[in-house]
Amino acid sequence: MNNNRTFGQIVSASKLKLPDFDCKQTVGIDKLSVICNDFEVSSLVPFELVAERKKAGQEQATQNKLFDLTNGTPVFGSKAFLNTKTANYSISSTGTLIVNCNPSKVYFPSQHFGSFKRSCVGSYRLVTEAEQLEAVFSAVEDDARSHGLNFDFGNSRTFRLDLCKQAEMTRPFADYLPAFDALRLKYSKASNVQHGTQTYQYGSTSSNTQVVLYDKLEELLKAEKQRLPSSSDFLRAELRLLNAKTVEAMTEARTANALVKLPADQLNATYNSYLSKRLFGIKQTELFPDEKSFSELVRHFVTEQHRKNGRGAFHQIVRTVGVTGISETVGIERFIQLYGSVLQEVTDGNFDSVNRSLRRYRNELHQLSDTASALYKTVEVVDLLSELRSALVA
Image 1 (cartoon, rainbow, N blue to C red):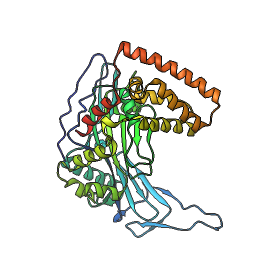
Image 2 (cartoon, rainbow, N blue to C red; image 1 turned 60 degrees about the vertical axis):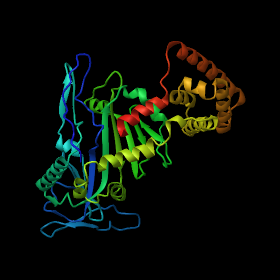
Image 3 (spheres, one colour; image 1 turned 120 degrees about the horizontal axis):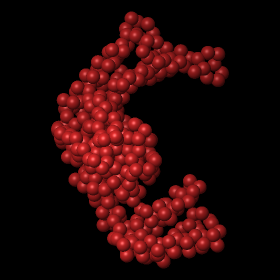
Image 4 (cartoon, rainbow, N blue to C red; image 1 turned 45 degrees about the vertical axis):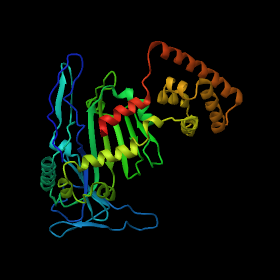
């Protein structure tokens, strides 16, 4: 695993300024989960035990043995779990121990940073070195032993791994929203999922992998019940490997110890390759190469909004492509025709109602186009995508 660069404090009189976030050359580990069948529990006291539920038709609930204490006493139930500041421990109905931890929070406890009257507490540094990860294993094992649980973290099988990069971008996070809207995870059935205004998720909860992009500073401040007047330029991008087979297939590391022994640049290569092929796989010059692909984009937004019983497809398209993009791709009048035909087909809307909407949209587009050409040149989505790609996978 690569060495992390030194984080220095930068103070600004005008706004809350955090230490250097730059982590472009290597990846860090944000979440690590392992599964273990060989463990010992000396005391059930710290654990919360969930009893088996009686099902319909049964006189009493079926007794399921979770495990035996070290003194031989059997423990029955459907689940036992323990949550500490260091890790979460759960023993499933099959008698398997699952351990979830955040290495960055274990190795780098919450740090206080800020300037003047504004500050926040939160862990933002990433574990990037083998020695750091080994220290995390020891810390979690020590924590478990202090609660009567013994297991070998390093030889347990890894079944979730979050690889992260983060950087201070040249623009605020919100400026990249059109690019985030345009991105799709290749081979994924679902499109992006937006959580709030500052988090974009690519891949569903049932997927083997997910990519999540979000404003890390907003997350830190939200935990402190603080808010920025606008988004920050602190971008974090996480590649989440969500099951044991995927972790092993993509990293060639079955256990946590094997993860430590990986060559320094292998995790970085895994991260870069995945994002390059799966998230930034569309050639930038071919984002909207012709009218057909533009029509498919229109159909996507109209269909999605209609499925949600909502409106706003028109403004989502304008935000994603930009007024200049619409004008130069197919022209305003042709776009209105395309939009109208798709709207009529998908929604089966009233002819007069659709035409009223189209007239309003046409006027709005012409006004926006006149303003854009007179005042500024809009930033193309492909330019924003290029900046994101350069920051994350170059």
